[in-house]
Length: 146
Image 1 (cartoon, rainbow, N blue to C red):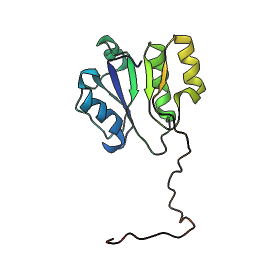
Image 2: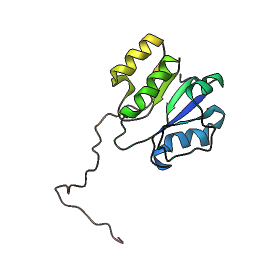
Image 3: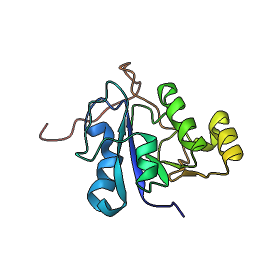
Image 4: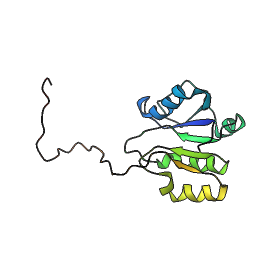
């Protein structure tokens, strides 16, 4: 069970679309959303109170939810300091990214020491390629009306 309430982590999301996970939680479970945490350069804003990890903890937050769906679904190195600090403060982490929390050795080690839980809420069964602009082989069909 993922403990509530949540601090919604926006990281360095370039725009609102990248923060679609956090937006969904804010819209569908507003009672579970204590605030948002953004890194410098973040282009998304949920309209929630911007909080530090300490402020959100004092407000009752139990889980830091990675609310970003970035290119490739990866856990950014730029986020690691914040994620590890959150774990050390007693936060559980929750993520739906392609890159699983349980595959990040530094996060796993920190969670084991702190006694916190890492929640991978979506575990892909296939690898999803990221578009790279290179033309693929094979025939393509053009839909009628395009």
